[in-house]
Image 1 (cartoon, protein in one colour):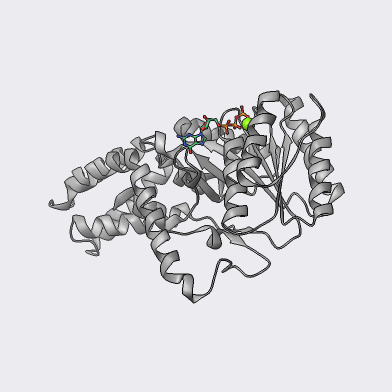
Image 2 (image 1 turned 120 degrees about the vertical axis):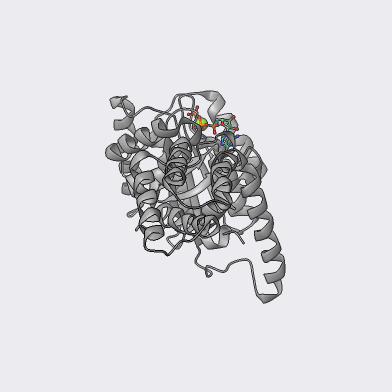
Length: 333
Ligand SMILES: Nc1nc2c(ncn2[C@@H]2O[C@H](COP(=O)(O)OP(=O)(O)OP(=O)(O)O)[C@@H](O)[C@H]2O)c(=O)[nH]1
Ligand SMILES: [Mg+2]
């Protein structure tokens, strides 16, 4: 059973928003549906991994097993260091006699991968500040605007939150329109500035609107940028400062979108981004389009920043809360 939006968000009216015991069977059915879809949409990574792992099921655990497993994890972009740690751990356990065959190996591997996908920082999002401000940043084309749109939809339609969207990507008119379409779909308030206005002023206006309207959540979309574009990185710092001045403690979360299909390169980008602006969570997108979904584990382990949401397709329900156990099971089961 998969994690749902009520598990990701801490809301003022209680984390279990959405319902009493009467809703439980329905919620359970929905979770099962989520898990099936997660598993299905991550097929490319799972196929690549499970072929190697299935092959070990009926064999003795020997040198060849470890080599094959190592190759499979590296091919899935789990990263060299993390892979070595996992394989060495399994090898030790096998030597001690704790793992006797492929089936136990596969179960233990699932546990180890889930442990790696967890960081010490909270993987939840606290929506108790009113309003809570979420700032979404990242490299061009990584999925910021669509993730913001989908998130607004889930917050409004499933959790009944009042949402304001701020179009602080003032770079392209099309970007503003794209977000406006999403706001209409989700039925949420939309704030934009005049053409080519300053992103800081749009962010300011969005937060002011959220405060004035008594909104629960303000989500601010920003223009894509590379960590090497110093002026654009400085602009982000300014946007953050403007928001903080308007509402002390905000932005409460700065989420960076990372395109999973860019693999280890995406990891490098996220690291450099996080060095330039404070990042509290990762939205890992396009996991459906890659056999290298192991990047989620490398990101968690090497950056220590929790993956909070994942994108597994272009449909609304394909933006999902991330859960380490679900993810590991979807990769291997
Ligand atoms: N298959 C798949 N496509 C995705 C996912 N997330 C986003 N996309 C697609 O990626 C493309 C870029 O998404 P945007 O949301 O426009 O990206 P962005 O980061 O806002 O781009 P810029 O504003 O130009 O920096 C769109 O075609 C999205 O539909 C995902 O999880 N899976
Ligand atoms: Mg965009």
